[in-house]
Image: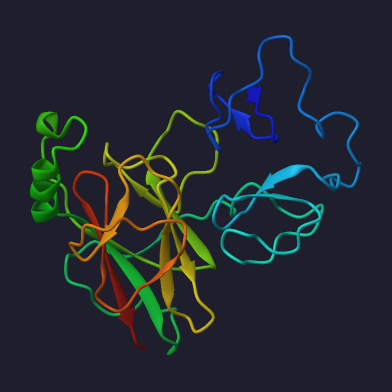
Length: 238
């Protein structure tokens, strides 16, 4: 197991599985803070850390993230991304039904993950990387999960890494391992931002890519990622 310059564990020896930084060469000393660090686990002031919401770099003395505005963890708190959370499946039927029995009457939101053939044809028209060699997965069925917590990462499913998997894992070769992030707003609605993915993120069949400035989502909005995947965002009232 390799340790990247900011402390992530990585199975890859060239670039970190988690943040993409160049791994130290053989014989290099361990990254600062991993040897002789504060026994409480508190990172030293000035150490470069990663925002758990948007993956923007910050230091331990920064109170708020410059990328998304969320308050950064206090020294000694969790860093390097949100904790691993298993997706809470609402249903596998293509038609969205009622909330799970344990849900209360408050409004909740779901994301329906769809193998979208119309979007796939648009990708072919754009002639994206290796687009002509891709085969649309007609056998895949849509699935729906409930949006929970403060943020949910969208990324490619990868069993070869020990880093925490994304909360919305997608088996689409055009999706980056750290592709996009859904963020909960104060009023309970959601917004989306791209994490610097290779193929970008678009909304509602538009051509403008979403950047690191979050874009607010409405009921029924469709977020397009990868070669054929669409996430349909739905509000579900109890």
